[in-house]
Image (cartoon, rainbow, N blue to C red):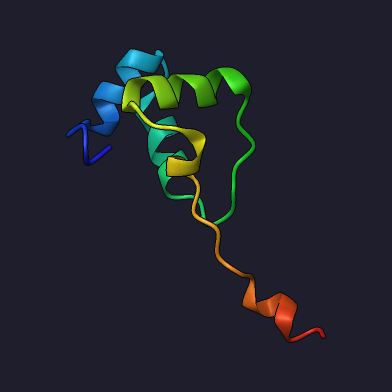
Length: 66
């Protein structure tokens, strides 16, 4: 969103969702379940790919179980 200088409010208006929905997606600690239409809209309006939206981090709690 920073590359496009897009606010939550503007993206929400383009996607026809409440700004809180955008904020919630941005502030998730875990990957939220989103539908294909939502993913497509995010990528279209942000001019990106799904890879640009997802950051993978190793869950350190899984390592302690080994």
